[in-house]
Amino acid sequence: MKIPIVRDILEANDRIAEQNREIFNQNRVLVINLMSSPGAGKTTLLEKAIDALKNDIHIGVIEGDIETTRDAERIAAKGVPAVQINTKGACHLDGNMIRDTFNEFNFAELDLLVVENVGNLVCPAEFKIGEDFKVMILSVTEGDDKPGKYPLMFHESKVLLVNKIDLLPYVDCSMEKIREDALKINPEIVIFPVSCKTGEGLDAWFSWLKEKVKGKKTEVRGQ
Amino acid sequence: MKIPIVRDILEANDRIAEQNREIFNQNRVLVINLMSSPGAGKTTLLEKAIDALKNDIHIGVIEGDIETTRDAERIAAKGVPAVQINTKGACHLDGNMIRDTFNEFNFAELDLLVVENVGNLVCPAEFKIGEDFKVMILSVTEGDDKPGKYPLMFHESKVLLVNKIDLLPYVDCSMEKIREDALKINPEIVIFPVSCKTGEGLDAWFSWLKEKVKGKKTEVRGQ
Image (tube, rainbow over all chains, first blue to last red; front, side, top):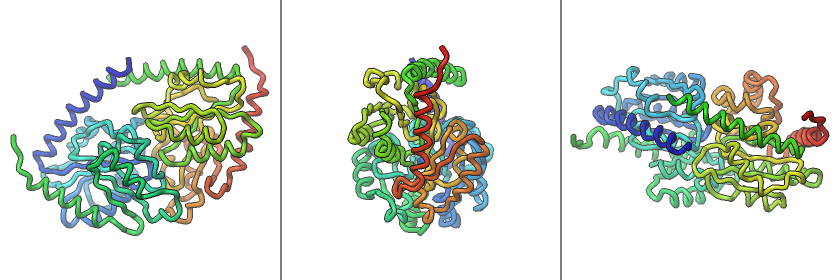
């Protein structure tokens, strides 16, 4: 009896996400949906990206959290427009929540909108928000068995950032196993091993992202 | 429009959880619902507990995962009865899923049943399964801002195990802040800092748990 209800909610959400996407496309804003377990480093990674990219591209941020405005405050301190969504218990962002932030942004002036989802390796992967693509972060401290155990997020993501590689000497985690298992689930996934602490690997990810922003700005679009 | 549906599901679940609980009580089995983010160390902690306690108490385990039977295999290798639930996408265990495992156990022979929930710091806290109490694990690698950002799980748990304290020198995380913020949300929560790697702190947690198992065996119950 639960299945049809869930399907209705997902279908209604897909329609709203599609409307959001149309608005993002009209404004040629690249939108990424950033997902991970709690504490994998989403906000820190975003702070680093803003520092590295804000002279070249105009970035806006939507922060999704169950409670608190801490993350949006951290981002706003970097001098970019940031809006906090408090989901009040909900474990993921959906299309409606994103639409409710639209009055807070001038999309014509943005090149990149990063939506930081609620920390959760399961539910956010099911809900589209109008993004161009999903980016997930896995911290090496979570262990190398995660692709097999949480396959949907690996399947839905275009990019996998493997974070905290500076801690590899202290934890039982094989980078090679993560890579192999992630590629088994999603052969197209692009993997960047990074450390927000040492900066290792970040440049490669930022260059890749900049290319995608440029592509969105210059793409030829039909009706 | 979504709220009533969600409320119906939660109320139906509460009724089934209550029936499970009655069966556990009749058999005087202490049942704990073990929750955390992915990779915080639930299964490793459970392996350590089995090694330490299995000569004194009879332990059974239910493993909840979206996919794979890896965790139940790890537990069964320790020589205790273990049943794997694959939720096939669902982000939490519920009362029905637990009930479906009952044929696999002889509860009259068990003292302690540990239910390892799906790795998720949000949704599992909303669903009762018939447990005596909830135990959550937070890894120090997730950061000290987690009580404020994921308050429900801290609010619902009787015990907070702060794991991976051997990594404290390498991460930005204050044990004191975790303690303070967790107690603000739940002044009754019992906190054990532990390391599954070095064994630090585990004995205190195992002793506490053994006392609870003993209490359940000898409790005077009304009709």
